[in-house]
View 1 (tube, rainbow, N blue to C red):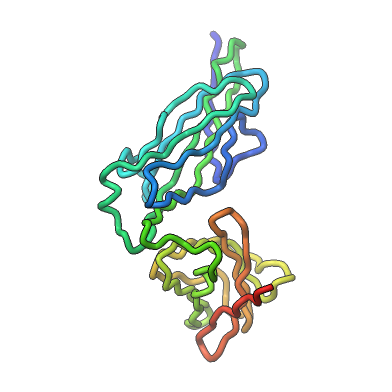
View 2: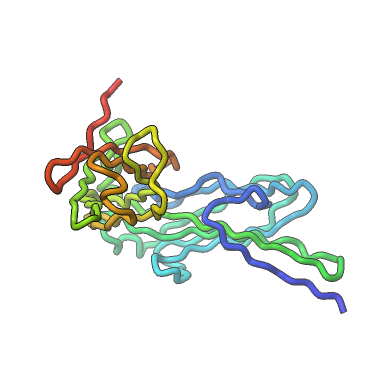
Length: 241
């Protein structure tokens, strides 16, 4: 008897093995628009694939509102591009308008059924962060990055990251100088708007001049250098060219 096994692999970013490729690593949904279009493409030159998209809330539950994916499933021909739209529904007005709300956009590729027996089929899935950003807190791309408002407060042998901004801030690395490697054992964290979270490494490991690396709207990884006075550390502003 022929048997087909489907293996689902969940990834946090597009893989080189994936047939269905996404054009970004995070989505910023501007509250001034009603929809955002994402470019997708089938990197496989021989076979068509189905692309299935959906949104999850912060707890990992699938949702259909206040944001939804159109179309939820589509066929993409070999080597061809397509688009997926994230659509805002009227319920989006009920979200907090003074800060971001985080969701997760999921994109799963479904390969065509194999005609060969005892075939292992792999269905890869991409999961990226989706931030709903109300129009009232639109970011000035030419201004000072709001992440420079972060502070650190020392509590025991830990630094706590304090985020006074209305934006989520994802910290992906920590070190004690800009040119050196990050501290071993550091685990990324996402600090919520007007929230605080401790670094996952000791204050001793990052020293008295900590350097944190965050992810910006475009997937870039700028660094923030801090200077400490007592138990409080503030960002050293970047010099303008």
